[in-house]
Amino acid sequence: MFERVDNFLNDREFRFTIYENKIYIINFKRIISLEENNVTLQSNRKKLRITGKNLIVRKLLEEEILITGMISKIEVMDE
Image 1 (tube, rainbow, N blue to C red):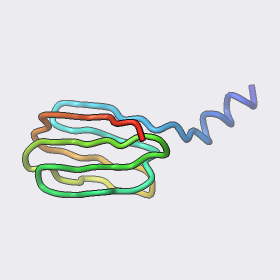
Image 2 (cartoon, one colour):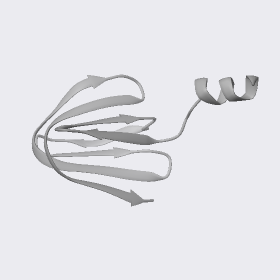
Image 3 (spheres, helix red, strand yellow):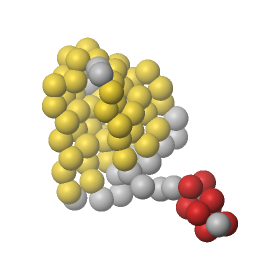
Image 4 (tube, rainbow, N blue to C red):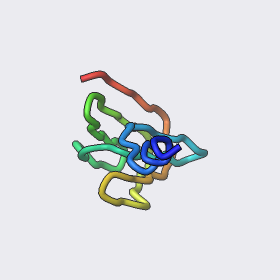
């Protein structure tokens, strides 16, 4: 049981959740580019590119980011 709690509390898996006109990303390592129509993030082994219009960072913490706007494309690329 303690192992499950530890896994939950120390979760380091890169993942994202897509909602209508927003994307929530956790456990990314750095922002590669941040533009109005393109945002690219780096994780340990992947890059995530979000393309759209009027992309705005609504929340930014150490390893979490919430981006809103008219998202048209999401690409996940292996490193």
